[in-house]
Image (cartoon, rainbow over all chains, first blue to last red; front, side, top):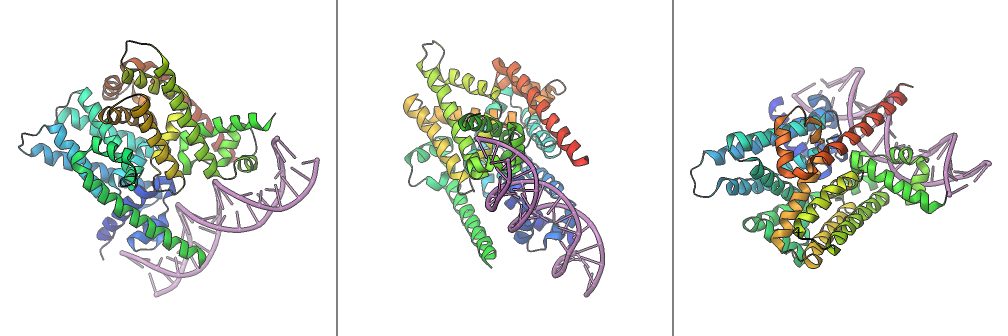
Length: 206
Length: 206
DNA sequence: GTCTATACCAAGATAGAC
DNA sequence: GTCTATCTTGGTATAGAC
């Protein structure tokens, strides 16, 4: 396989793993295993875990902007903020993408990762204001909703959807049209994590 | 000193350190140093780092609820949601409190920490709905604003307040009355982190 | 371009003295 | 109740073969 294809493969795997365990919590071995390559190869290809994470962040932000730009180019009677919101929630189906971003957003104290996350966040702000024409209050409200989506997905809230009426209520209040999607994605993520835990458990015993 | 007083001291230090570096990123040695005790003592007192973090989370949530309850008991013409919002932002001046919460909120995948964070989040939801009388949409909007505060503080956005007009604009749109507080808190946090980095740098060289 | 083997270090936890 | 010393594990990164 060409190095560039491997690179894409590893970046996709890294996005999932960083989304599940965070920048510090994720290991290069987990990424390697998820991508089907050896751990040193991951390091070799990206230099350091830090550089790999910064690249994951950058690509997630690019993807986010692409989705917004595609929406912007469409004709529609539905208000733009609403369409952006739905498009954003739709991104939960791309494994680890929003969660990796969220993990970046809590690392402001890190000199390298924090700087990258801050700049990325402000790029989104600038896009919404300058290209999409939102005013600052609209942008603020929109971003707040986005952070709420990230938090609820990050908390795996949908795990309790069937047993906890309050969870059902909160999710319904936030994204009525996207409930089914959110639940499905949470289900898949849970399965992935359970499989991973089982595997590492077996290894530990062996 | 009595063990219980030490305990409080360590919990306060842990809240700061976990807020700065996250659950995985923070070390028990950092907590110990911040509290002025030895690393094994921290572990001895709380059993494991995990238990320590869960306790930090629980106390942060208690503190949050206390602040809301105090607000609820007051007579005022200002709408309750507004007062709650201001009270919430006011908590940024308690070092690490909101940031520790935020770090908990992205760890939903962890069997122990995730469960604690999820329950805590839903407790806040239940409080806002049942005791404060918000309807689900109000609660959702309120929590979204809260997550936005956490994110901006976590990103250390106020670092760029003076140099980046877009940052100024976004912060002003979000919390006009609390701008000065946010900047001051970010400043203090930056100083603490810089001091910490310098110290650990010196140690590494020695 | 990709692997195996391994060096190296840091972190959590334990033992046991005082 | 608190410390020093230390064990153990696991994770990043490097060396070098194929």
